[in-house]
Length: 305
Image (tube, rainbow, N blue to C red):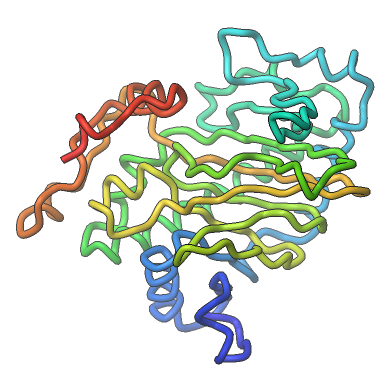
C-alpha cells in the first residue's frame, strides 16, 4: 500500500509503497500503477535489513575513501565495463562535475569476476554477496507483480530481463559550483530494472508531466527505476523513467545502483500476448545491439515501429 501521506500532495510525489502490508494484492496494484504513471517508486519495509544496508553502504564508502593508487587496484580496462574509473572530471565550460564509479557483476556466479571486486575493505565481498542475495529476491518479487500486471505468468519478465545483475556505485565529491554543474545528465537506464540506494545527500530527480521532481530521501528505502527493457517488453505500458542527478557544494553524495538486465544475446521485444489487439511499438532487438546503439546515441527510429 502507499504510505500514508497528505492526499492532496500524492499526485505530485514519487509513489512510496510499503510492501510489508498483509494485503499483497493492494501492494501489487500500487507497484503496477506507479510503473505505468511514473516509472519510479520507493519501497519501504522491503525486507532487506537496515543493518545489512548500513554495512553495504559502509564498505562502498570506505573503498572510495582509499588512496587513488589503492582504488586503481581494480581499475577498469578500456575493453571492459567492470572496474573503477573516473567517469567525469570537473569542467565548467561543459557543465560537467566530477563523478567516480565502480562497476562489477554480482550475479549469476558465472558472470562474476572477483578481480574487479575491491579487496579493501576486507569484508567487501562478504557484504556484497549477502546484499546480492537479498536484492535479487526483492527484484524477482517486483518483476512478478509487473508480470501479473500485464496478465502474464509471474515468471515472464524475469525470464527475459533477469539474466544478470550489475552493481554501479557512484561517488560525487563536493562541487564548488552546484548552481552550474550537474552530476549525471538526464537519461533512462539501458537495463530492465534498477534498484537504488543513496546516502542522505539529496540529488536524484525524475521527469514527469514536463517537469522535474526531487526524489525524497527516505532512510533505508529502495528506489526502483523501471528501465528501457521493461518499457519494451511491456509494449510501452510501463514507463522507463527519465532521471538525472545534482551535486552538493560541501558534501559527498553517493548512490548504489543494482541494474537487472538481460544477458547480451537475449532478444528483447514486446511479449506476443500484448500485441494481439495492439500494434507493437518496438521491434525485437538483441540486448547487446540495443546497448551499442544507445551508448553511441545512434537513432532507433529506423528500428522501432
